[in-house]
Amino acid sequence: MFAVIKTGGKQYRVEAGDVIVVEKLPVEENGAVTFDEVLMVGDKVGAPTVAGATVTGEVMKQARDKKIIVFKKKRRQNYRRKNGHRQYISVVRITDIAVA
View 1 (cartoon, rainbow, N blue to C red):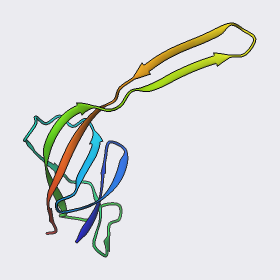
View 2 (spheres, one colour):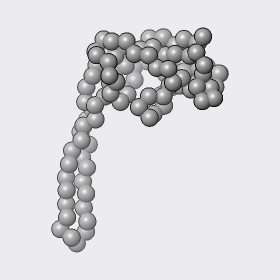
View 3 (tube, rainbow, N blue to C red):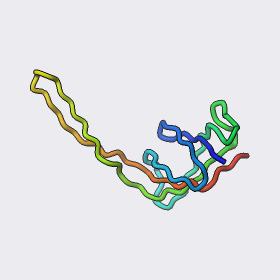
View 4 (tube, rainbow, N blue to C red):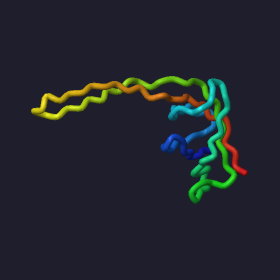
């Protein structure tokens, strides 16, 4: 059975045992996390969420993503700015999908 959850402003299609990379969650490594915003479970579609449905997972790692380069330029103005950015991420293993 699969579910669609919403976290960090994004939606993820998950099944039990999946490993997903999401925006940083305020949970320590090896801690449990529960996603309450479940938009869909199997063939049940929520309006906007499925009542009583939860998805639980385990935070495997708190890390930072690859660096992206932010380069701004205005032509003919001698204006160039170069910055780098590394987003904080959480790696989560989905353990259970429960529907009440």
